[in-house]
Length: 126
Image 1 (cartoon, rainbow, N blue to C red):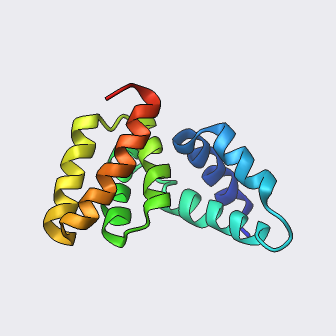
Image 2 (cartoon, helix red, strand yellow):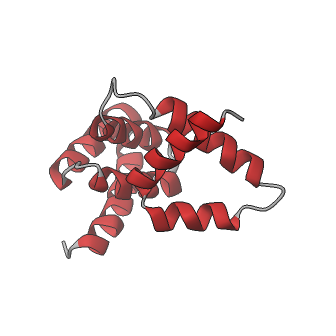
């Protein structure tokens, strides 16, 4: 594992998902899952999020669109929280879900709205 990418990735992951969330995930890793957690932190967050070509807000918006398209709703919810932390507004989240509806179908958009509502209600009542 590339230690430099891991450290960069760890910082980016904490900035987006929150220190508590990341610490909990890393602490829960065991001998079976630790190599994946470390590789994912280095690759996804260090390599993928580690440059400044695309700002964190835009990356978060891209993630919501892609995760919504894939139907990975647990990860969508996690990244919705991160998107809010990275400055994505409620209105922008709604617009992203509209794009998911157009390209992936209304049922998938409804799943995104359910997840978004849950996340947004954590921050403020709808």
